[in-house]
Image 1 (cartoon, rainbow, N blue to C red):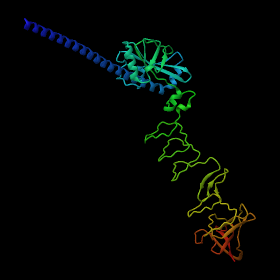
Image 2 (cartoon, one colour):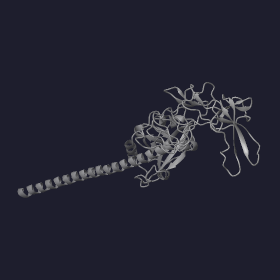
Image 3 (cartoon, one colour):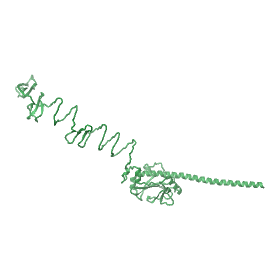
Image 4 (cartoon, rainbow, N blue to C red):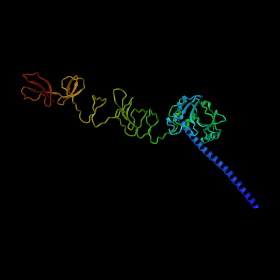
Length: 403
């Protein structure tokens, strides 16, 4: 009997121990399952936070690049609305990005203008599965300072992570209800000036299109420019198919043009080293600047040469025009020559020998029928004094010998 009673006690103890083990195992399994569920929830919350951040970043870039257009369409209580589809069609979001977050909620970018040229923008999710209060707070925390959620405590406002900000939803004309994510962009024109150069003009804010430091193009081109206004331009090569307008140009090498070098005033070409050149200050004369001399080993040709001083010839003076002594001339002082090269001058309106006197000897020559006569001209040392009328088919000229 004693043995049987001891055996029964031992068997009862084993059952209790097994029961305790089962209870502990069940508790451990439940805790593990709970932790695993939390782990999965955190993964979902992190993915939702990353997705919301991606949408907010694209929306921020869109607003900065299209600031003027958004300002024109947004009002204090009438928001400009930007959809995910708009962000994709304008290449601010890849087309492969999902329109919905991990809870099946859609995004909407609501932008208002509470003060002139000051924007407030919020990205809000709508529809889909409502996010629990705890998960909503965690998603906002994962997003950082700009992250927020709509709490069950007050569905009329969006609250930032750790209570960092709070914004009423009514001006944005949106009421998604509790369990949705909100992202505050807090865009102001003053804040954007410090970090961004706008592609489009913002009325009343020219500084948004102005650089505050030098731009290094890293060897890239600037194309399709209109007017380029600069204090100084330093370049290796400049090519222009249109006009170049400048106050001054300094070129250290040669200057070549296929057209004219034109001056628009009383200036012309000037040699900086020797202080001479060419210019015009009236419609008639091209002048030597500084009364510089003109030297050439070639030929100078003109319709008329006028000297206000002495005329010097280094070799011979050649007179190509021939005059006939005793005939009329246009102006006293003109100098010419005969066919023999004798010098004639215009005296009292008549061509006369310059210094020769005529002797008394007369030499006659003429041309008659049949030839045999010498050409009708005076021989060397003689000058023609007149011509006889034709006599018996002969024509004579009279020549007198020069003394």
